[in-house]
Image (cartoon, rainbow, N blue to C red; front, top):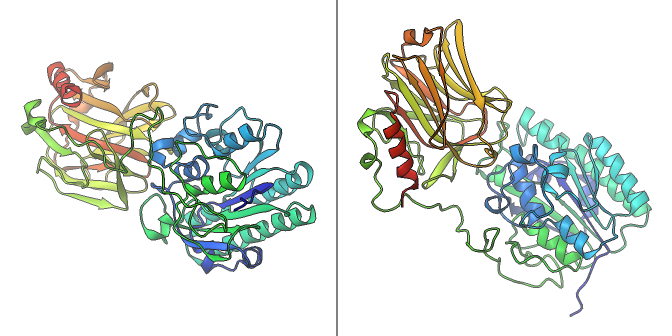
Length: 508
Ligand SMILES: [Zn+2]
């Protein structure tokens, strides 16, 4: 059978729209795709966060392969040699002189998800400006591959709740912009042999969140219109398959390391193939879903350190139980389990874990954990030890301020503030953090990956007064963070103990 190849592919992504299109008034989508294909049950990437989902859509792999996070893409440009080529890089290789354009309200897509250096036309602005720029690019440059991202629907979801009246009105406004883009393309004669696609990166919950694994967050709609598109509902699809659809439509072979496929029933000439399994960047290792390496056989923490001196211990291996058995925990909001050092780790966004009544007296203390920082809403605290169950007032808290990792020891009106640069390459990586405080010497130390980073001697001596009995620990508090193996000790860990802890993680 002759394979149909398109002259152009337009992909419009509506951030945060999930599959709520079907609940909103969308006269333009209705007319554009009246003879097209749709699927309101497309599974997006997990976690259901923008960078992860757009990354999967454009790079044809899951987040555990592409590694994009909101924090990363907002900070670092994507090098030309990102191990999993995006559809843009692929199109550039196949069509050296074609116009390729990405007009995106959320600019990190242009800088942090699409590889730099391939002569892509980039543009950004508020949704109405995006629409205006897209219409200009279509009229003047006739792009072969055009990606558009609209953001205001997600904004409305966060503000009013996903699925609410105000949110659905925002989808209707996005629909009007999509209609304008479509009509401009039609007027300029750009719709002949064009594959026109509309989808979303993720949905969201009624209380205004996304990142988790509810249906409302995970399921999105996908619409397609084009000469070889079958009419009606098509088969199983994941958001990364968008990349396959684009490559197929442009007549390009998809890269071997994509784990994307053409959904069944979308194209009349669609070739059916199994989803390729995901491979690590060098091709050496096949990822195995979200199962992570378990603690090696025979590795028992108590063989390395005195676990009796722990005041709490959270391995976060699928639950939030305190394995020291000393405190009860309560989770507020949603957390999810992602790849940890040993087995899984807890990833928190607008959620937190509360552990009540930890008795520390006026002892020295040590906090240890593996940490991965995501998009950091600056100066929001993500780890708080307080002698007040509300997680404020007197106590110790950790957070990121700019590029600094900060510890505040707060005694009501007075706060002692310690800060040190984050470790190099912290972004997107787990690193081990220890903060220890010795009452006798008024010495506070930071260790990164078990190496002493810095120590301070307080001149104010206030911490001597800090009574931590009956306190609570709050892990996560608005700022997205992944935490694994969190331990709290009632003394300052000695150098030997820290060496032993390192051996627990590194020794074969
Ligand atoms: Zn998003």
